[in-house]
Image (cartoon, rainbow, N blue to C red; front, side, top):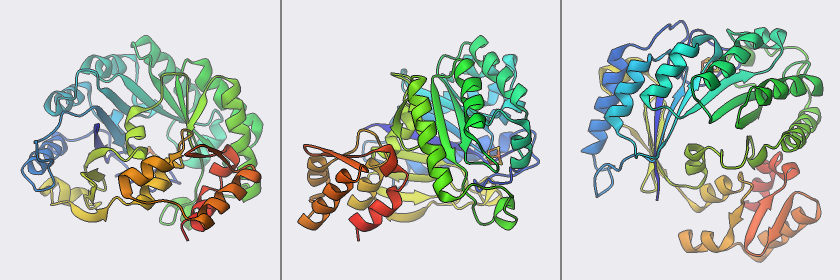
Amino acid sequence: MSFGLYIHIPYCLSKCRYCDFYSLGGSRQVPDAYLDALIRAWNNFAVSDLCPAGGMPRPDTLYFGGGTPSLLSPAQVERLISFFSPAGDAEITLEANPETVNEDSLRGFRGAGVNRLSLGVQTARDDSLARLGRPHTAAQARSALRAARAAGFENISGDIMLALPKYTRAEFDETLELIAGEGASHISAYLLKIEPGTAFGRRPPEGLPDEDTAADLYLYAVERLAQEGFAQYEISNFARPGFEGKHNLLYWNCEDYLGLGPAAHSCVGNRRFFFPGDLHNFLAGPPHPIPDGECTAEDHILLQLRLASGLDLGELNTRYGVRFNQKQMHFLQRCQQAGYAQIDGDVVRLTPAGLIIQHSILCELLA
Ligand code: SF4
């Protein structure tokens, strides 16, 4: 069983209009007091009843997510990596926003031990970036990708948002050309979702594609990414061979992970828990994490069916003592006939057309 550590950095320069991640806009840097609180949270966990019996494992993956982790200085990243002491061959990822990095800072992050960079590019069109409230341009994203390569990063991921207002296949092609052309080895491509409580939730933008158009754009993206050598390994994730993100795979494969920071979630020894989304409280405490139940067979099915490798029914039975009944198997066979799933011995996989309606498939399968 692998162990992943997620460090949430809840600070951003400004708040993007679609974003419902827990973060504080208007921040230019991360206070050292926040690093102190992260370290206290780790130490508290190590002496709590949530800690594995053999003591704290060394993380196999370390992921700085946010928020905007590239607001940390290289010295702060070095302090955290040195404290959390990941395994020697650990994947260490830092999410970065293009406007916050340059070749010097990226060299600093690389020197501190970060070996994977995830860059929020989103789109190659400046008018779309401005509509989203992103504080950078496409030219800044291109420079950041170039700087990352010059600083020695070989494992670089770029984020793309699909189905933006007035979105076209041409906008996707330009974005793919920018990211792939600048040497990324991994791409995350997400459909824009309008979340309540965000600026877009309060006032949706004009020109949003309808559901069918969004689904067509997603299927087009999957096809184009495959043509460019990025194989789909999860609903929204695509990689050149050998560059799949190990940290996120650990979530989908139901392995142990600890999340530190406000609103960070964890699952250790099948027990789930999270820190409340309250930065002030986290800095002052941090508080005890809140229990959130156990990881169940349903969670396992849901997570495994996100992956191109699919759900192994034998493993489901071994791990949770659960088998699909005749009605469920019949439903999966109908999904196969309709082109939404493939059944290969004991393994069930959703096709790209099935992945986009995964929610409806799961509702019927688990009803
Ligand atoms: S930079 Fe990322 S975390 Fe920060 S507001 Fe924008 S989308 Fe949200």
